[in-house]
Length: 107
Image (cartoon, rainbow, N blue to C red; front, side, top):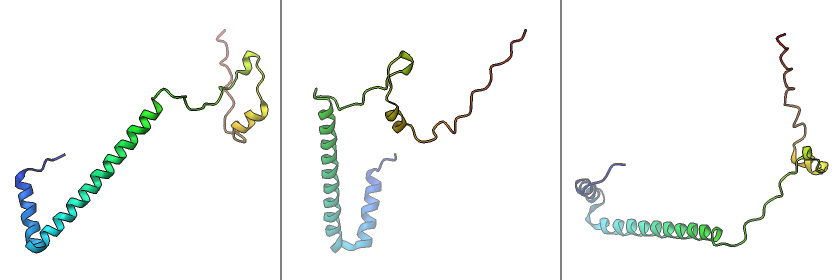
């Protein structure tokens, strides 16, 4: 990002003086200063809110609730079929092609 030096600031102020005149320049400077003050206030409030949210999560309180993991049907545990159908969209297996046949033995 380019830096603005004193020469560039002087050129901008000279152009502003020529465009707006000496009577309106203080009024415009006050408006720009007020807008910058509001932007800094918004930035400060946003930073404080973010720090507050981050400290709320790491203050040692109870963790957020989580869902229980799905159980493995291969291990012999019973899986609720109705719940499994709710999780899977209809025709979820329709787009999956069948696996290719195993290669023949090179005997």
